[in-house]
Image 1 (cartoon, rainbow over the protein chains, first blue to last red):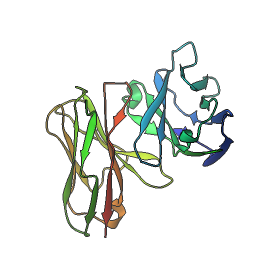
Image 2: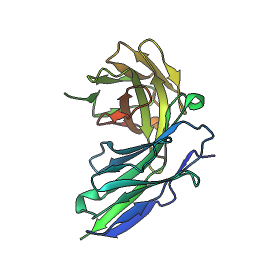
Image 3: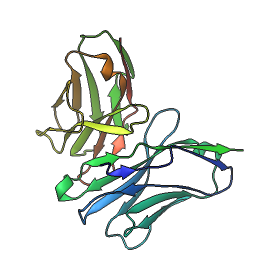
Length: 116
Length: 111
C-alpha cells in the first residue's frame, strides 16, 4: 500500500485564486513529519513547508499553508493568490518515526498549471 | 554556499557501461540520499547513508552501489547500465529527521 497518496495528477487554477493540492498518508507511527516540495520545469526540488505530527498549529510559509487533519491522515497544501510561477509539479512526502527510521517517502506528485 | 552539487548534469551510456554519479554537500549534514525519478512515479529511494560510514538500501537498490566517501560526499555507481536505469537521479542531504535539500539532478540515458 502506498504510504503517500496524491490523487490529483493534474490541477488547473486561475491566476490570483487559491488552490488546494491533496495529500493523504498512511502510518501507524505517532511520530512523523510531512513535507511539500515544488519541482518547476527546470527540474530542481524546492522545499516549501513542513508539518510535524505533534505540531499544534497548521504550518504556514508565506502564500503556502498546510491543512493538517490528523484524524483523516491528510496534509493538503493550500496556495493562496496563485501566480504564474507556481506552475510546477508538487510532491508530498512523509518521514515516519523510529519504525520507519525517518526515511522519507514521496507521493507521485500533482501537476499544477496556473492560467493567466 | 553551494548546497548540494551533483556531477555530471547529463550522461548518455551504452548498455553494459559503468559510471559513477558524484554528490557533495557543504551543509555539514549527516544524512545523504540517492533517488531516482521516473515519469508518474515520484521519487524512489535507491540508497541512503544515515551517517558517515553507514549505507543502507532503499526501495529500488538493484543494479546500484554507493560509497559514502566522507561526510561531504556520497557517490552512486552503476556497474553495468541497463535501459531500465534511464532516469533522473537526485542526491539529497539532511540533518537527521529534518528537511532534505536536493541537488540539481543528473539526467541519465542508457541506450
